[in-house]
Amino acid sequence: MYKKKPHRRYKLTLQFLESHISTSETILDLGVENPFTKVMKDHNYVVKNTKGEDLDSDTSTIENSDATVVTAFEIFEHLLSPYTVLNRHYHEFEDWQFDWLLEKAGWKIIDSKKWTHPTKKIGIRPILRWFTPRYYIVYAERIKNSKD
Image 1 (cartoon, rainbow, N blue to C red):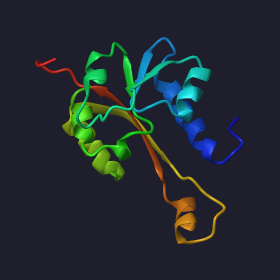
Image 2 (spheres, helix red, strand yellow):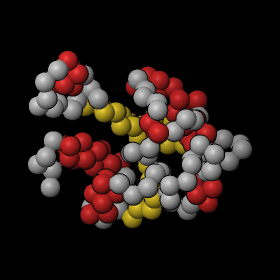
Image 3 (tube, rainbow, N blue to C red):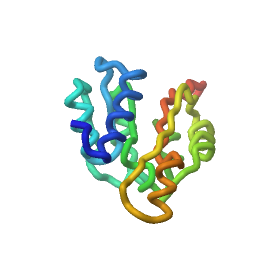
Image 4 (spheres, rainbow, N blue to C red):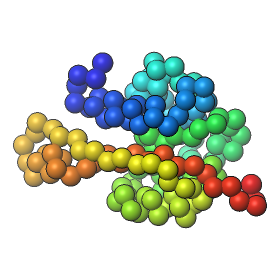
């Protein structure tokens, strides 16, 4: 299942997910169904996805969800304002920028991991992908405050 290089990311993401989230939890994965949705379901997670609505302006699915966990594996880079989504339950972030955004939006980072994604292509960027972490995953919990 994980023999192809693009699926290495799924294997590492699944390992991280399994280390923090039980299959007894219900997951709302932001964004439409994607290949990792199937991986989660194949590993006994109960997963619902948003329906493709513009999450920058319509957060009703998030607000009305009864899921105990929210994931965003394939969506943040497509949002103009991820702060709005995080604050209510084309960007690329440095790890410190994403940490800062999470903390500012009321989340406490519990764990994180970075990894590289080497390719067999030729060029400067493919060479850099052997040494520079391209993927960053974070497990964070919403900080309760008097407004919640």
